[in-house]
Amino acid sequence: MATITVSPEQYIASLPSIVDRTSKQEGATKLANPNFIAIKYNAEIEDPSCCFKTAACCGCLPLCFICAPPCSYFDKERSYLYLREGSLEANTSMDNYCAPICCCCTFDDNVYVNYFDRAPYAIKGCLCPAVPKLEVYDPACMCCCIKLDCECCFGPKQVVIMPYETCCLCCPNRSCWCHNCFGCCGQPDGNPLYFNQFYPQPKNAEAFVAQAKQIIPVSQRMEGKSS
Image 1: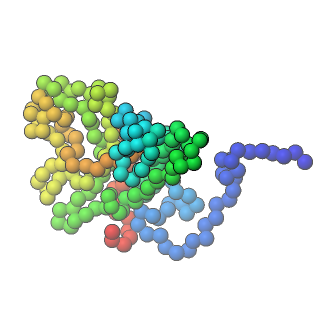
Image 2 (image 1 turned 60 degrees about the vertical axis):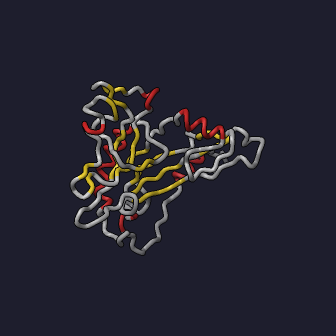
Image 3 (image 1 turned 30 degrees about the horizontal axis):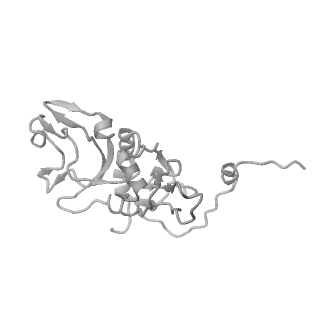
């Protein structure tokens, strides 16, 4: 009898899905199809900056949750950023040039999942609700009413978590003319002022945010226990 060999991916894909859960799932953990978690955006990962590469190689990464020895580097092929049906999942994977000869230079995956009905995306407050969302942060600079947006100098656009649009319904959380002296010097209009960053970043920030704005508002209001 001939032996048919298939790739590991094909073999796993051919296995049947088993769902024996009968208990209720609540909030954004609910699945549209109990057999799988739908991925609504599988992002191409942005290349790490020169600062990140240097810090990784020197063993002093700026990410507090990663403890990397010298000669480390960002493993782009293993890292990922998934916009899922009710959450954001990401993996910042690291590797080391000395790993083949040193068993101590190995890493665990740095995986996290944030559901959109819990922090940092949960809606907070009653009278003045704060509605977090993903926004595009433009690192460009205004100079004499001209926008300087060279990625080599300022870096690419980033996706950030904007915790609110306005504070107490009166203080906007976006840059305007008063933050760049009428376009003379400073960041461009419309940038979030107070925000949280995450890693890894998508290569196409605008497309990622556009898709997220279709998903997050719905997931934030899914019925479930209060966070």
